Length: 185
Figure (cartoon, rainbow, N blue to C red):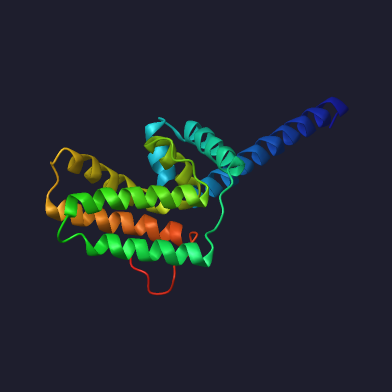
């Protein structure tokens, strides 16, 4: 084999190795995003018309999230919020519409105390998706019913469902993402 042929073969082999390394790196990064964001990964890929665009979007969310001062709750704050939630739930039978609105406010207040910005619903979703992507469908469902309730268009059963959805996110935030033993979803 001539020197020129050997060099050409080595260049091709090297190029294939570089391509294989890049493909592996992208696959590892994508798998990381899929695991971290859960169902939110597929939802973002669908909304962004592709996985590469979703990857970029989710990396942006991670970067923003890393710049936030997200902190766990103290045991005292956790107890206070748990009591507030119990009080809100107790009012559901007598005032279901108001209770759902109060649940939304309580979740927003809890988010704020944990360090999440609360300037807008869409941004809340993006910020929460980084650590709580598995419960965002609950938040979306609850928020949609809360909006309809504001226009007096939600049934009592839908309001009950919204409370269950809010509770799922509330418990996730209350326990800093760690589910307590025996917790309901």
